[in-house]
Length: 196
Image 1 (cartoon, rainbow, N blue to C red):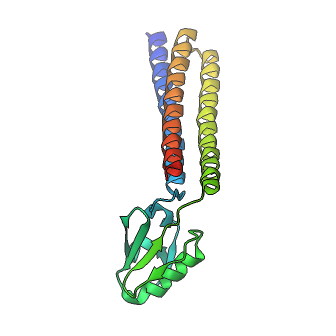
Image 2: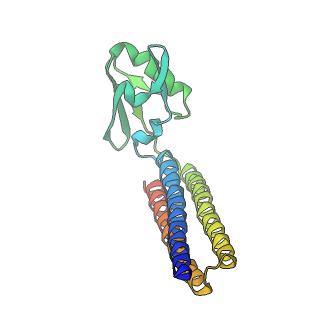
Image 3: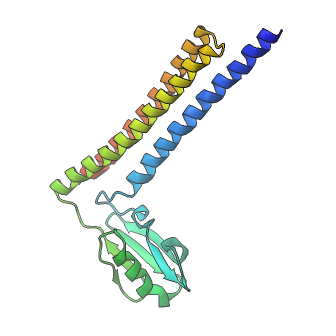
């Protein structure tokens, strides 16, 4: 009976370990998605303004807490301040950020006109995206390595080699699933960048 109990607790541990691996790999995918959303690909994307902080009543707040931000077309981001007196603060925050686009305003709405990137700039953006994707892939591979190590140590603690092999196969499947997901994310972004 106690041997069976021991096996059950180890099996649950293996499941939990694989679950942790998947969660860590999911974090790598979320990181990649988040980073890619901030890269300007020549199309208007409000995510490029995520890092912009506006001085508002004595504190620095995210832009979307003082204005409505949207994309009326593929080349324009429109920012409509809730309080028109803040238009200058919003413009200053955009100028001080790393967005790299000079805002224009008509007294009511601030517009950011997204320039069409040159061929060379698009290639640089693809390289930049691929670097970020590689970082995420390295993280997924590191997670796989850490978990493999844990599974190997578990054999010493009484985990059967069959269970360890099964767990390793499951781990490889999870790894492959996330590498594929990262590839799909980066392929979609590269396509978006290279499409004129």
